[in-house]
Structures are given as structure tokens and as C-alpha cells.
Amino acid sequence: MRPGPKPILLRMLVALACALVCRTATAQSYGVELGNTLMPASGGMGGTSVARPQDMLSGINANPATLTQYRGTTFTMAGTFVGSTFDLTQTGPAPAIGVSPFSAKSSTGGTVVPNIGVSQELDVFGLPITLGLGLIGTAGAGTSFVRQPASNGTSTYLLVLEFAPSIAAQLTERLSIGATMFVGDGYLDGPFVGTSAMTNAFALRAGLGASYALTENTTLGCYWKTKQQFTFSNAVVLFNQTTPVDVHLGLPEELGLGIANSTLMDGRLLLAADALFLRWSSADLFRDIYRDQWVMQLGAQFSVRPRLRLRAGYALAQSPIDPSVGTSVAGVPVPGGVPAAKYLQAQFAVTNQHRLSIGMGVRDVLPGIDFDILAGGMFPAFAQLGDFTSVSLNSYWIGAGITWRFGRGRVASN
Image 1 (tube, one colour):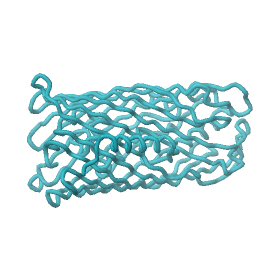
Image 2 (tube, helix red, strand yellow):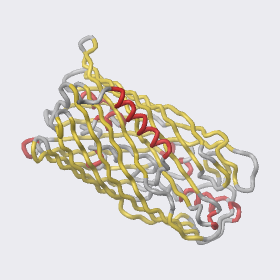
Image 3 (cartoon, helix red, strand yellow):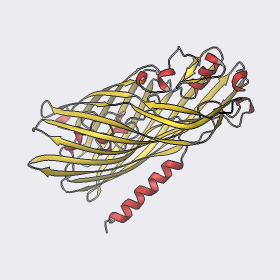
Image 4 (tube, one colour):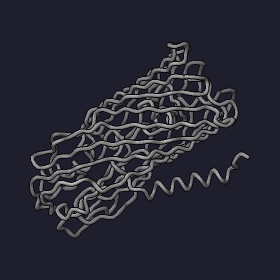
């Protein structure tokens, strides 16, 4: 018996609740943005999804125009476990923030990042329309050195969840356009050394996209996301101070271009490439510690049989770490000046350039039900931040997703 709407809604609420209480480790991300790297199908292809995403959730989160590539009703529940090793070494004292030399591994554990969504095909005045709705883990980072007395309780947690309604319209046989409204719920603890507690804030973000079938086998895609600015009120009392201060933190304006082609191997091999630009200079807090970042995502999917697909991907990302920092972050003067600002920067130091991923998709595990799995790793990277602070980071992830298809399902086999 297929589950009714009430059990499905209950599962969605349980997954969301789990997301809210999980502390997110520094994971497979570009800066703190997760993109589509943890989605059930795109995640196995290095995150490639701008032109022809292989899961509906990736369309909602990146290029909403691609939702027209799905027919009938599609519902997906997915989750990915992410673990990381984050080592921080402080060789000199920072007395203004109460930090002494130490070297330690972050005690933040792994976590599950959930992604849930549904799409519905409609016909409005003769125009094919697809509506989508997603609950998406968009951004996250976390480090904790509270077990090290020399760190003076250094701990940082960031989690951003998005409630994302989308709409896409197929204007011609080749051209589709779409839009997504992201209603973000952000949670922040830190990153300044001092007294802080988990604080939440809300912010909006818009996404626009277009998809064009250049030929029967070649699809082009593009999207644009606005910046998203959060204000966490009274988020922290700085070390040796008594008055709480607000922390302004944002996610960057983002541009994406993609191409996908299924000409080779009689259409059984899908190749995809995306170029992403994250304008961190548009985002509060991160404009003070990050620089603008380019990302290249490459992915492949081979249909071994009509029901079985193997996936692989590679992503190359510039390090977003800005070598030049000032004495103020997010409008807050950092006690201790540049060395202390470098210490804060280290909490978000995702400097890794190389990522590999693999995945597999099985269609109709049961009638109308698809199953996807993915796994990947972020190559170890070391970074020296200023004279006294250095970090080393690597991570791994493994996830799965289940998709229910009602109606005609996906248009193409790839």
C-alpha cells in the first residue's frame, strides 16, 4: 500500500526537526555554500545540474527552469551524512580575545543534511507549467575547540535552511524559464570569541533561471541568485565586553552556466559541465574574510541498463580565503586587530580545491519508485592564515534519496 499524504508530511516534519537540532560540520561546500553537491543524483556527478539535473531538488535549488523536464508528480526525500577532520594550530598568543597557543582537532561531529521536495506539472491556459517546493540545506559550517582551555571556548556553528517554492514555464519546445523564492531560516552561534548562544534570523533570496534545448541531445542552462542577508540580533558579547552586538551575515550573489550533452554511446552517456561564480563581496561578514570565487563542476552519467545508472563527478573550486583582512568583520571591530581577525577567518577556512564523487541510480526499484546513492570526498588542504594561525581540512560524505513518481515521470531517460 502506498503511503498517504499524512505519513509523508510527518516524515518531512521529522526530517526538518532533525536538521534544526543537528550541528553542522564544515562539509563539502564552496565557502559555506553547499550548492547541489549533496543532492541524491547531482551529488554523484560533482554537483552538475544547471542544464539537465538528474534530480528535481537540484532544479529547485539552482536553475528552476529545468523543472519543466519533469512530468506528472515527483516527490523526493534525501539525506547525506557528512564527516570532516578540521585541525587548527595557533602558534602565537592573542591576548585581546584570550587565546593562547594550541593545536587541536575540532570536536564537531558529523551530521545529516536533509533535502526534501515535490514538483507538480500543470497546464495553465495551454502553457505547460511546473510548480516545485523544497526544504533544502543550503549552507553550513561548524568548528568547536571548547575542550581546549587555550582556545577560550572557541566555537562556531552556522546552518541555513531554505523553504523554496518554485515555478517554471515551458515557453516553446526548446525554451523554459523559472523562478524560485528562497525563504531562509538561519542559525548562528559565534564566530567571535566571547559569550554567545544559538540565534536565528530570517531572510529572503530570489533565483531566476533559463533552459534551452540547443539540439535534441544538447541542453544549455543558466541561473542567477540574489544575495541573502541575515541579521542575528544580540548574537554575541565580545571577550572582555558586556554589551551584546548584532552580527550581519549573508550568502553571496551567485551566477551559474551549464551545458549537458547525451550524444555519445547512443545516448547512454550524459556529460555535463557547470561554471559557477560566487560573489562573496556582496555578502555581509564573508566580504571581510572571503574573496569572489569561481567553481568548475564536471559530471558524467552512464546508463548501464534502462533502469541502472552509474555516475561520477569532479569539482575544482578556487579557495575563497582572502589573504588581506582588516580589523573589522561584519561591522564589528575585532578585539586584537588583524591576528584576531585571522583567527576568526580560520573558523570558515574551506580552502580545498579538489572534490571527487560517485553515485548510482536505480529506476523502478518498486513501480514508480527510484533510488539514488552518492559518495564523495574533499581532498585534504592546508592553509596558513597570517603569522600564527593555520588550518587543515578534509571531508567525506555519503547519502541516499528515494523518489516517488506519479503520472508520466521524467521526460528523458537522461
